[in-house]
Length: 92
Ligand SMILES: O=C(O)CC1=CCC(=O)O1
Image (cartoon, rainbow, N blue to C red; front, side):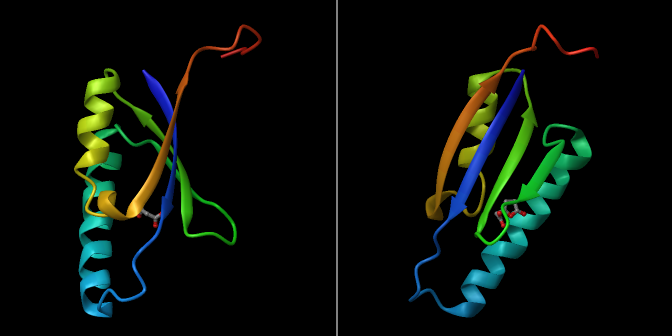
């Protein structure tokens, strides 16, 4: 199943910069491992915002929830999930 996910990151201003960098480095490594596995095929920056739109290709809701809740930035993000279905006009 495909899901479009918007993630808005809100790191607390009082977080020490070295801790923020460490969390971001773990987030990047985790994200890139899922991308290599094909479970996170798209990630796009929202212009001008500390946000992304991503597409996940997973078995279902439970797998997506497990994957998202394991993100190192999960405690600092608002996440909105949109399940995607095939469009009848899609030629692919
Ligand atoms: O920077 C972001 O949008 C948050 C994020 C998700 C995966 C990643 O590497 O960074």
